[in-house]
Amino acid sequence: MITLQAANPAGLHGTLTVPGDKSISHRALMFGAIAHGQTRVHNFLTSADVLHTMGVLRALGVEITQEGTEATIEGRGLKHFTAPTRPLDMGNSGTSTRLLMGLLAKQPFDMEMFGDASLSRRPLDRVAKPLTAMGAKYQLTDDNYLPGKILANQHLNGIEYHLPVASAQVKSAILLAGLQAGGTTTVISPLASRDHTERMLEQFGGHLQVDGLKVSVQAQDDLQAQDVTVPADISSAAFFIVAAIITPNSKLSLRHVGVNPTRDGILRLLKRMGAEITLSNKSTVGEPAADLTVASQKLAGITITAEDIPAVVDELPILALAATQAQGDTLISGAEELRVKETDRIAVVVETLNQLGADIEERPDGMLIHGGTPLKTSQPVELSAHGDHRIAMMIAVAALVTDGTVRLQDEESMAVSYPNFLTDLAQTQAGEV
Ligand code: S3P
Image (tube, rainbow, N blue to C red; front, side, top):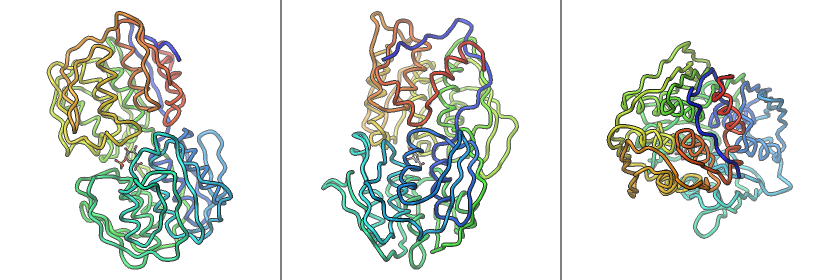
């Protein structure tokens, strides 16, 4: 347990490069493993989730070396995996589990897999159902949870699948299986979700057809190794963006942040709340990126609906904190997906921020945040992130502007996506970065 720091009266200052994007780092490992030749990944994220994907691929015989934020993968195509000698450990990572269920859907051996307590409560039927329709075979618990097995399978056929929810994980799993399936595999999404799989597949020489919300692939085993540069993770940058906005006298610059339009909902929604965030040095090496500059400023409440959610799905906890400091109400609706993330993020955000003096009403598909509530606690309060990295970081940012002592029980959960978050936050406090 740690005692979190309140902000200095001088605010947060400096220029910071947050770690590489988690979604892109997972995919770079997977595409590197199934391509031919040596893939090099720059600014690779070495967080617990991504290291689980790396561990699984190594357990399947893929040679991967990693030094700091540089990773090298020796790819030998889709058919070179070797039978693992131990169950595959997915840790806390839904992305590893779901994407690998697609990537490994046609291997000549069984693979056992397991995850931690949180991952063992997250639904897998959303991927198992379409992948089973393609011919894949899984053995999961009666309710379609981990632990389970990907069973040996020789045959996959293409399908046309309408996703019931706008999930990039499910879309990606089906596309990865589609690269090994007879005929055409088509995924149709109800709303746009992050398109890192499509972009990276194209970079590796994949043939895909994209028509609005419809993506198709055919079998292809000649992907070519690439150099992948991973931008800084906008989901990690979001904590500093909101910290700067709500902490008086602050000004932060964040370098080379990924601003893929399927991921930058946090910028668009904060702008709708009245925030000014400056983008400069825009570049596109595989993925669009820019430097962001943001200072303390006032926000106004807004209405957030289902169409807004996919591009901001991981940032809603920190956006909810921002909304507690805005003038007026913010309504988040159409966000029921939050209930099946690392925790039930609707219930946990409401409970946690209300313990700090916020006024948030829980809704089945979101929350109603009554803004303008100063955060305070008369007694020292001990909060738990329930093992959820994004809740832990939200609590650390909330503590900056909370009058009173805030303690966090499970700060180690931040290592899932941002192992050095507290060090980086402390440095912005001193204006040292
Ligand atoms: C991810 C997709 C999102 C997101 C997760 C990472 C990905 O999940 O919440 O953190 O890398 O594809 P869904 O696609 O299931 O919404």
